[in-house]
Length: 356
Image (cartoon, rainbow, N blue to C red; front, side, top):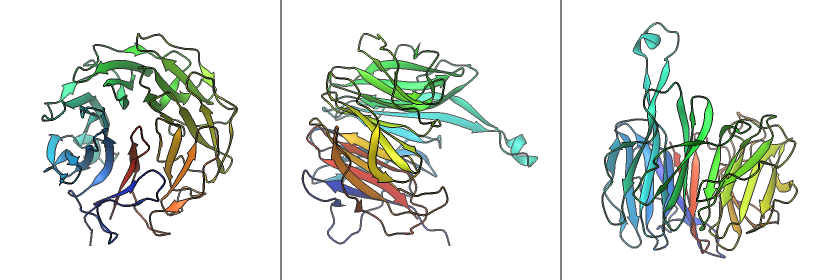
């Protein structure tokens, strides 16, 4: 018998261990049948949760003390969504719409998946989600893998693959990007992105030699020099980065059975890559940094791709190793699904995942 997926969340107050949100009995309320949850938070404690369901992409807004609003359908697309939120409560949901070839499925040769483009639904603070808006140009050879980040002031950037090249566009509040520009010929893969309060975005991907690398983009669109973090070899999914409000930045990637990391203080440069103190071969599911440079990481530190591992969180700070783990799920639990989180400028964090 197939069980419904439930949305589970764990919350962290500064200096306290994680506990399941809103419940002392280690249970949580399921918003709906649930896969691929994503969450974002505002300074006033509001949260925006988005997920995939049989009805398509669904979303709900959480208010402190009042729980979550009734879920609304954002799009009939079943693609994996991403959500970001600014301090005022403006919300941007991004997703890639896809279509399957019925002919390919019928012949048993596998379904041919084609991209219909990258879209957004935008909610001004206190309002409702708007109709989907196409962000990517129509009728392009390849449009894929959108990533988005937003700062407290409402500046946001979205990066995606467009005709085999990685590009970036910038929005503000409820205004989507007017266009996209290339991140550079030496920058490859799907990568990750974060943005600070000054509007400077940091993009983490791989360079032409498949090493973990970063590049910055200021609010006016100027690109910085490519920074290669390490000589480790990574794939498109290996690198995770997080950028705090003041510009604290941390990057984490797997290498040789352990996680390595590099960090940058506000206005400074990245230090040398170091062992993070975490054993495992899987890329962390999520990492966040607050306004003071305190870090939170959620991961399943398995040593092979088929091993089932407990979900754990670790805390640290810029320039220091991560601390001891706090286990959130039972060892050996299967089908955890992706885990994501959100953190505000004061260090309050929430982790969300789905289970069957």
